Image 1 (tube, rainbow, N blue to C red):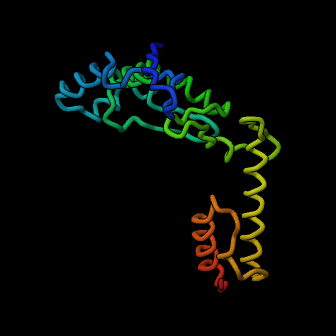
Image 2 (image 1 turned 180 degrees about the vertical axis):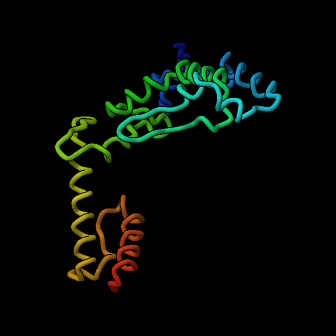
Length: 187
């Protein structure tokens, strides 16, 4: 995988001078190949493609009790191969691993993305900058669940007074949704 370092910004700037990013996708041979395949598309025949056993096998995936069937998509196998090669050249696999480790892959905000912390089961840890963010996330999820239960039971009617600033918009949405579903009246 080829990575090109970004030019260093002058001292005192907020640039990520040590961040190494792949070449822009549109500058790669894989992108050019995809572009050529799209330009040469002379009419993809889905019915004929459905008779292709190799294509059907490659475009059907089963995992965790789910089946993903892409056989009816206008996706020739040579295009699939180029998409996989492009993802590999761009380091998508490495970025996924970095995301699961909590590394700062959000180049714009210079921080971890932490999407995975929301999906970790209770008791799992994700340490970022010395803090177990998974534990913090589960504490907030527990608070939200307790709050929603209190609204549904009628024990609490002040749903618009949450003190979690980062979740205020979600809290208002949840409060309105719970109130609408349960008939509770919120002040």
